[in-house]
Image (cartoon, rainbow, N blue to C red; front, side):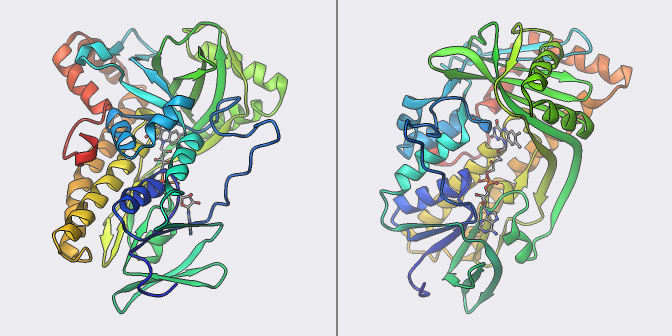
Length: 419
Ligand SMILES: Cc1cc2nc3c(=O)[nH]c(=O)nc-3n(C[C@H](O)[C@H](O)[C@H](O)COP(=O)(O)OP(=O)(O)OC[C@H]3O[C@@H](n4cnc5c(N)ncnc54)[C@H](O)[C@@H]3O)c2cc1C
């Protein structure tokens, strides 16, 4: 690739990198995505393996209203929503060790939904479909970036096939362990939460009724996220954050038919049978949970977005939403700079991006850490406080409204397309 052929290289074509590529590509930027992952496998002869068809995917995300507005403005949402996206109107959170419980309802703030649960592979397919219509965006798959240097005002990236790619700007959207972040020498603050998230898919005897539910157990939170499969409401995606030992036990159960029966019984019991009997319909996968925050989001001609900049506990389902806001703010700053005739390489523009995003991401990371401490504690005083807290907040509508606005992603310095 010649030095003047590309405006920006995005390392990582996950949900955040692909969204940034679409934002910049639509504005006429010449974008190259480099992704280590191979192209998704083609669907089978009768359509099996097609994202959004058949059994639900194991990886799902709760998307906020702000993220949905971003995807609507990019023409991604209608296609996705026609296939499979489960709207939820309510949220219930309770403590297994006491009577504290809180309910949120879309009516509390006069909106139709509090969010949507979407399957990650379907969302990525929707983004890919739009990106394929843009001739100025190139997506190179199954190529791993192995070295990075900045020289003569350009980013030089070496690939694992020994080829080199060059561009004036580079973005690290390469996930929580971001190789580009390390190659650029950007330090990261890291905290092991001591928990592992186990995900699986289930059917429940009673319908979820469009409500996302989460119980705080002594080992960590267990979420039942509502799915809409074949128009029914008896499927949920499970995220059970727990100790490494229990996570290993749960994933082992997911390996056999009899084990899954047992896993269903354990889920039914841990969830207080709120949705009746639980049947596990897929394997169980484990994801260690570490909270990470890059010390800097930017360097000369370089920006980090999404999990490469910050990764957090999945208990509030905010990770990808924060990353999407990073992408939207970075694109907004760069596109505006170019429209004004300013040099998008000006370090002040990248500094503005960092200023707009860092404090909000830091606040969410701190909140997740606080939640985990409060609900992970066995201290009787803290148990009393959290039960009182849940019950107290439940009775305070103004405070609940503030919390719902947070869950909707409607706070802080939102990029224009998400307002
Ligand atoms: C169990 C669980 C549940 C979650 N639930 C939610 C939720 O409900 N809501 C929510 O908002 N968030 C949720 N999250 C968080 C969310 O999944 C992440 O924040 C999000 O996927 C991060 O997206 P990303 O594009 O930044 O990174 P990734 O999805 O990690 O993508 C990184 C990409 O970079 C590529 N890559 C890596 N290294 C290289 C390299 N050297 N060269 C080229 N390419 C490279 C990879 O192939 C990959 O495609 C959850 C996370 C977990 C673990």
